[in-house]
Length: 598
Image (cartoon, rainbow, N blue to C red):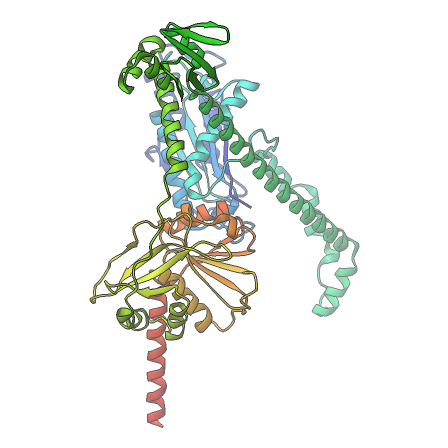
């Protein structure tokens, strides 16, 4: 399941409410489910012992013009968190545990969001780490900047539909701030509810829980063997009831997860359709000026199904026109062409005339329509440039091969196999040329990635001019039969990383099944071949183990939900291959030394 952003707002209408809330968030009173060994963190506000009530009073007195109304909300408690899938992706059920780096990123993004939206109106924010899942309590004094009065309604909405709309926009804003972390917006309009803290404590201390643990018949008897104990409790009706309840719970959780997945898909589809509608609306706004209106402004009169005047007889058909006058027989399309034809002027003069008659917006519409027409004509008539691979220099291949096998420690057999298939060769500058192809039945080369191999510290790398990065990829298959469909795909940042990963997987790890695997170099989610990979069940994202690699991996998972993240132990997969080769040589030397000592 994808991690979701969580935001709730609670009104504190009296200073008693403010003090009571502080007792919980500052741990001034016993909290049954809090781990006293873990320390919470103050994100906003000084830890100088000042009471929250005094902070709120000071803020109100220094900012507002009038004494607060009796029914005014003095402070708003904003609860911020994310679902457990974000903090502990490997096992969300492990309450009280979290990934430290993810927690720090969440806290930083949330703090910045609070400061951006509320500034010094947020008098305190507390990060709780002593409960099941990290979360934040932020206290905001809801002061209206215009009226200088308290107004929770103005900031968060009152009751009913207005409050729902404002809260929804607030959740949009918060989810957008957390989006770079891979945290999504919940489904808009969801009827899901949350359990209040007090209700939670009542539930865990309720009779059904205590009854299960106090049932002495489920406890082992003295000197009872484990085998006998297991057989006995499996027959006990309470044990059977618990099993049935657990099975029902698992079934309901699976149904809930599927429903949430469908809801998220529906929400994304709704957003896609909204963008489509916006695009269509913007396109309609860019339509050309009606030629009939332009003809009228030009002084022509409509008679006998033609526009006549100034020795012209114009027929208008949508965006096209034709002049039937014997002295002006000519056709064209668009408002600018019509103005140029009737007024015998140039393009710039036609734009100036349209601006005078239809204003700036009208002139812009005509100019954009003219540009679209010219663009369409160019696309239809101008030949598309064809990509040309760098010229192969066979005399340089041995040097490139030595670089790949000796400096990069890639196996000679694999390098030679890729060379024989035309996927890597040498150019006249002694660059390793990695051929990029599409995924058609007969792959067409439409790009190349070059890697310099000259000198000890050569760092040249880049794409050959004319490469279409969205339509070509360096890739190869290993395992299975050539006719098999890939069951697994591995995404790496560069061709050398993809080849190195394959070396590690098929020559180092002996437990890898011989399934048909596609290895592909993708340096950005923008060039990810989603349609070709959508139906492959096992997608492994093996980008570099840094922040940019993590961000790219999250973007890939958005596009391919079945994807999983792989992290190498070195800076990249080639370095891990080199480190492994070094360890292997050291082990071989030790074994030789042991043989000599015998």
